[in-house]
Amino acid sequence: MVNLQHNTRPATLWTKNFIGITVINFLLFCGFQMLVPTLPLFVKDVGCSDSVIGWLVGISTLASLLIRPFCGIALDRFGRKGILIIGAALVMITTVVYHWLYIIAVILIVRFFQGFGWGITTTASSTVATDTLPRSRFGEGMGYFSLSVSLGIAIGPSIGLSVLNATDFTFMSFVAAGIIFLAILLALFIEYRKITPSDFSQFSIDAVFEKTAVRPAILIFLACCCNGAIFGFISLYGLEKGIENIGLYFTFYAISSLLTRPLIGKMVDRFGFDVVIFPGIILVAAGLLAIGSTSNLAVFLLGAVFFGVGFAAVMTTLQTMSVLFAPRTRFGAANATFYIGFDAGTGFGSVLAGFVASFIGYGPMFCSFSLFMLTIAIVYIIFKKIDSKRPRKYDQ
Image (tube, rainbow, N blue to C red; front, side):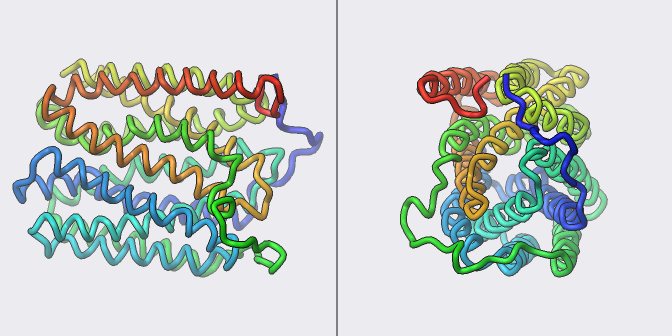
C-alpha cells in the first residue's frame, strides 16, 4: 500500500487560481452538456437514424482526438491563456449555429469543428488546474476539480431539456452559448503559469505523447466506450421505455459523482490506485446492467448512481496516474495524452453503440457494454504484472 501524501503539513490547495479555473470549467461543461440530450432530439426530428446520431458524438470526439496532441504541445510551448480562450470561443460559436441547419452533412461538419474547440478547451482547462496543484494533494485536488465536471453534467442536460421543452432548440442554444461566454470572461482574469524557453522541446512523437500517461489513456479509452454509449443514446432509450423527465438520469449520475469525488481523490492519495479503481470498475458494470435491463424508474436511477460513482472512481484514478509522474513542464502533453484516450473511447463507443443498438436494441446494447469494464480490469492487472519487476509508486 502506498501513501502519496508525504508532507506533515498539507500544502495549500484552495488558491484563487484553483477556485477560478474550477468555476470556469463548470461553466464550460454546463454550456456544452446542454447539447448532450437536446442535439440528438433535434437531429432525430430532422429524420436521422440511430447510427447517424451515434456519429454526433463520434465525429466530435474524433475532432478532439486529432487536435489534442498539438494542443498539448502548444500549451507547453506558448502558454495556457490564449489557447483556452480560443478553444472556448470556437465551442461557443458553433453552439449557436445548429439551429440554422437542417442538412445532416452540414450539422456533422459543424459538430466536427465544435469537437476541435472542445478538445482544445478541456485540455487547456485541465492543464491550468494541474499547474495549481501540489503533488502531495494531487488526487484530492483532481477530485475537487472533477466536481466542476460533475456539476456541469448534472445541471447542463437538465437545463437544456427544460429550456427546450419550454421554448425551442434555437433559444436553448443561445442560453448554452451565453454560459460559455461567461466562462470566457472569467478566464481573462485568472493568472496562468509562465512558460519559459527552457520548457520547450523539439517537435517529435515523444513531444506529442507523454509516456507516463499512455497506459492510463488506454484504460480510459475502454471506460469511455461505455460513457459514449450512455451519453449518445440515454435520451432515446428513455423515450423508448416511456421514462418521463430523462434529465433525472443526468442529475442522479452527476450528484452521485459530485458527492463522492472529493473522497475518491483523498483515497487515491492515501491508499493508492488499486483500492479505488477496482470498486469503480464493478460499479460501472453494475450501472450498465441496471440501466439496460429495466423499465422501472427507481432501478434506472439506481443504475445512474452506480455509473456516476464508478466512473468518477475510474476517471479520477487514471487522470491522477497520468499526470502525477509527469514532469511539470510536460503537464500539457500528459493531459493531452490522457484525453486522447478519453475522446477516442467516447467516439468509438458512441458509434459502436449505434451500430449494436440497430441490431439488438438499446437495453441489450447497454448490458453488453459492461464487458468493456471486465476488459479494463484484465488490462490493468496485465500492466501491473509487467511493472512487477520495476515497481512504481502506484503499486499497492
